[in-house]
Picture 1 (cartoon, rainbow, N blue to C red):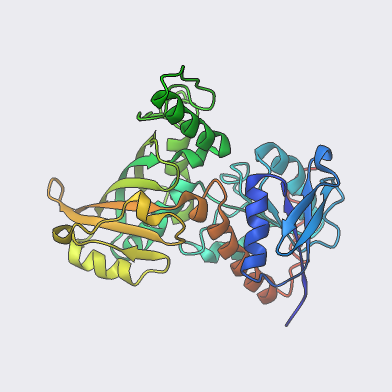
Picture 2 (tube, one colour):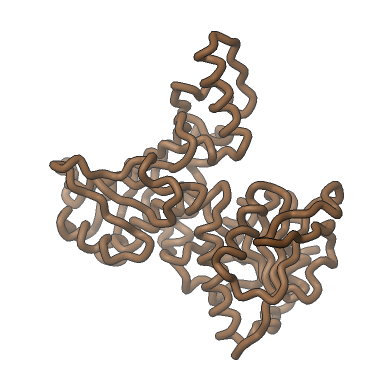
Length: 357
């Protein structure tokens, strides 16, 4: 079965939306028409799409008539307001914000981890947090093979995870320090240049940050395992691109480092880069611009019966937030297959309207 797809990008004037338009064009996404939407103040603005330009239209409740797939990259508030209208119109939403991630009506999907969850979507599909994406791409094959009981993760997250303002602030602070000028902190609570901040997002009542609890809750949801124990510490580091993670796992069955390397070397979206004697291990500078998740420093944790340590690195711009184009594009392709398989489930809503307008 073939059907021409109409795709809408909501938030098309922002960095996220522009990158998604570029990705759709560069990877020849099978769309007969691509529409660009943004807020009222961007009405009439031109945004690039390949060698041409698209005219931006104001995003409204009735913007989704005739649209098959809409990708939302306009923030949580916009997604919360407009995604239900898209779903009610028979359009399928892929949302990049945190708005729908933990909603029981919406699958939270990484194609390499749980593509089967696309089968039960009700019009809105959520895209996970960047740090969760790269961790679970590496851990899912291990979880399937020997069942992970506990995860301890410490993240070292690049400033690009905080958007263009985060990049600009690090760049400006480095300049100011070298020129003995006063340091200004706007995006981050303290100086980020030549510093490490053990805070990403706000602190919650349990003294964990919101980012840390995202990793905990999203892992449980995507692994369909409410009993898996996860604890996280998320830090911001003065690196422009690529998140790095120190991950310790405890499994039910024994998995040697050698067998773990072999298992991960066969996993989709994973590259094992691990030879300590040759100083081979992934690091942020080598992973910029790459779509895959890199894993190294795989070694046994001899303080527990079945424990492993590893180091996981991925370009957060390619794999997850801020731009999420790598994961969202793969989601799109998986979604197209799902749509064809379900004969374009304009019949999604046999159970009635699930989202309040």
